[in-house]
Amino acid sequence: MPPKTAEAPARSPKHYILDTNVLIHDPGSPFQFKDNVVWLPVEVFEELDRFKSESSTRGANAREVHRRLSEKFRTADDMKHGVKLENNGLLRVWLNPLARFDGKDWQMVGDSPKLKLQRQLFPDMTVPDNRIIAAACAVADAEKGTAILVTKDLNVMLKARTLGLEAEDYRTDRVDDIDIRKTMRTKDEEYESLDVSGHTVQAFASQDAMVLDKAANFLANHYLLLRNEEETTHAIPARHTAGGELHKLRRDRITIRNGRWLSALNLGQRFFLDALYDPNITLITVYGKAGTGKTLLSVGAALEQVQVGDYEKLLITRVIMPTGKDIGFLPGGISEKMQPWVQPAFDALELLLTRPRKPEQFEKKKQSQRKQDEPQHHAPQSGPSKPPGRPWEPLIASGQIEIEAITHIRGRSIPNAIFIVDEAQQLTPHEAKTLITRMGKGAKMILIGDLGQIDNPYVDAHTNGLVYARNRLQGQPWMAHINLFKGERSEMAEVAANLM
Image 1 (cartoon, rainbow, N blue to C red):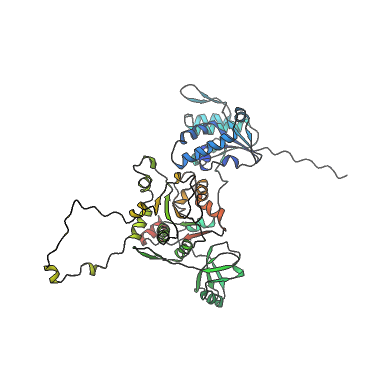
Image 2 (cartoon, one colour):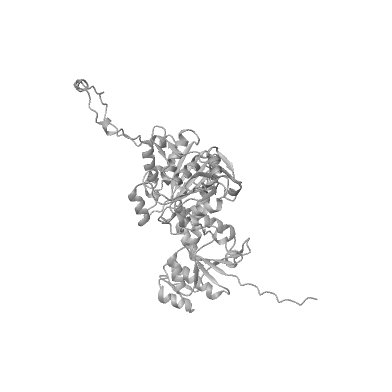
């Protein structure tokens, strides 16, 4: 009989106390902590109640949290003892027994070292953040196992650690993406290349596609350079579709009817235009600093394809991170409310739909003496002249271009349209999922953003919806990602983007 082995001691579960901002960032966050205990301080419900009536994304997420929690906590007994989750975890509400309200102020009556120190350092218990920290301290004192406060607020994190309480960021949706660092560097980066023989490069140049076994490890729709290994300055841009099959790029120019034409100015823009015009690629994510052409190329390629009938309409939105009142306080309808936020797209439309001016020598060409001597006849005016409108206004009036607010996208199905989401680095992963799942048949979505310019306090370069979407969906046959490194707006803008 084999000797008996000692049984491993049961693992003490960890206790995660969630701050309100974690729930706003990801309404599904309470269900992401495996077989541990998740605590929701009752102060969290108070803060969520303040947000739920907002027309912003924060308000929509607060309502989503309420819906999910109401599905779990169906009875008073559930609220008191907690509910078991599908991942064997336990979801509980913490009603701090050490909190006292005397009709005017909140007081913490506990005498543990953490609570004593909090009363000295952060005594104002009218601040919800301080009460949530106190709740986390009380959980740490009352429960066996490690207690961890999870928050997206760096200040709350530092205050908790000052009291000796473990605190960390919500990292479930954190992405480690090498392209984040590459596109935030100040110098231009080279694109990935595949070295082959000069004969292979010549053969690829003479045909549209080629299968190379050594290219089979690349993801679907990965852009690269097919480079002559004997003469590395000779290379041809290509896109790997699947199974080692490489295709030459199809388009490098935008041509707007009754407007301008634009050509790609660098290799990254050539990659981008190829993806924009490929009907089989229905989701594009783009990282690029200011001035790399993200908005201009997206709007131009989308407008041309609407003009020729490939898509029924162009939808444009921008993630709003206001410093004051949100769009609900601005006058007018959605287009008028959103115009200040999507002005970069309007600037692009203005440029694309305005024909270049004639050379100056033709504008100032002298008339003949006979023409000067002829009397000038003018049609009588029936009223004051109407100032010319913006060139894109007829397209909006006809419904070919729509300006949308992200909060109004929920519940919609959007088929046969091309949808541009500007400032996508401000999205949370939950918001990115909401947008992408709205796309219907025949639709295309373009998510563009600068990872060096994030104002949303709930995300950073590794947790925003743009990088989350790219990393979760890369490799799908209908998805492509492009990095834009080189600024083309102006020399001043490029130097400023790099040095400031």
